[in-house]
Image (cartoon, rainbow, N blue to C red; front, top):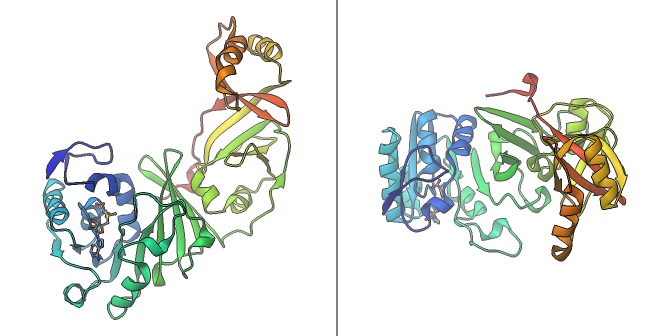
Length: 351
Ligand SMILES: C[S@@+](CC[C@H](N)C(=O)[O-])C[C@H]1O[C@@H](n2cnc3c(N)ncnc32)[C@H](O)[C@@H]1O
């Protein structure tokens, strides 16, 4: 066991083995603890306690269970680090009747199960303890369950009657939480954490409006947060914003939404304004960049590694301006786009 500093936590934490690697980051744990605030909660695969200590800050009492005694000892010490004294720690198999009996007064069962480090296709069947087994073992305790699952899994691969909540932090897909029973608020949701705020988009609130496939960007482009994309909520986002948008597929993994007007939404990772659109020719691009007093151009299209520096040097030759732009290639044209600062609008704010 050792005590280390990690970017996941605001304080140095106790860990062993790969404890920190699998621990829930504090920012996520705090959000989730707020959503699951209750009287008595059992975290039945608590690891080094990254999530458990945040539950303890919100709930009256918490159980922290783990099959691994050394990790459980880390969790016990981390409770001390975070100054919480309302956790009962239990070493044992969460599926055993001895453990189930000890947490019989829990209102909510939470589990962030162990999963294989590598898997070709992420699936719920490889989680330990398994979701169906946990629900069976605790069925006389409560019907309020929440589980963490690998966020790479699309909604349709999760074959349970639950809410699938995809969570994004700093523009990256970070977590997937499944909520069962009374905890289920909708089929799919996306949550974006920004500072102390969170923003939630739910399925079933607005009727999804079709987003037209487009092969060119109009005046503005919006890169949706990956949590919204993964939750398949782009249509709902357009409906909530009450705006007609097109979607431009850049490649298999990247898409941009586009519109004639600028829109502010915390569900956009980046917002761009189109400065110019030119044919893919380094001299043309360079001329346009000079006309717009640009200093630096970030290449967002695919260039083979052996041509990269040649293309970049030609594009950036003689630039003296201060502004940086992003260059996207769509349908054979190069879009020269300036990134705008996104200011989340208040009406989305919760938390
Ligand atoms: C992903 S880690 C949990 C990390 C935790 N959320 C944190 O923030 O530190 C999963 C944990 O499940 C525990 N585990 C696996 N099977 C278990 C079982 N049957 N009963 C109790 N704990 C189990 C592992 O020992 C491991 O510590």
